[in-house]
Length: 281
Image (cartoon, rainbow, N blue to C red; front, side):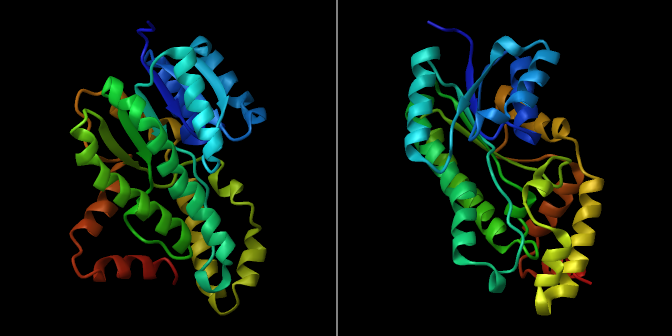
């Protein structure tokens, strides 16, 4: 019987997922690092080798929006390692644009990867996690706490994940499974580039929202220039993975904690609205 704890992490080709995979391996875990396109695994394998943990990082294909892919990957993990002690739901994708100018297909696609993908992986993993009284750790976002301009679809998905996990946590606890959500703010990753949009075109296409979009883009680009590193954002994930009794909700920086605290004490919403409106002026 394999005595090394095993964790499956989604979305590990770059950014927080890559850093979490290497960090978990450094902590002594067998890491099943999954991604939709394993041809993009080079950065991860190079980082694992540089950290001296290549033997603990196994790359597998998993597409969170494909149920057959999820089920197949989990069966392989159990067959090869004999156990699954934790899942880190990290895979996600952004979408910038206000609802009037976004297609319903865009909205549905955003919900599929950011919400339904999390649900699918969690649902499939729970029987295995119950067996070992494991943990579900999910990377949400400060955008799952505070709704952000031009991010209606993305924030809706992240809000949904927060609600799903907050509801699941006490139920899972009765079976010995811990649930934690990790809320990053801006992280210096490929996330912005991976949105696949041209900033100039986005502003030009915003029509009556053009000036607001310009202000939002300027603020967002500045925020990402001052962002946490992926290693800094991944550190709370490793703490939630290895700690004796991790909290349900964890923010990755003092700045994110400040914004989250403002939301959670803002009973009529006026404070948050004043904050986010300022991003557009």
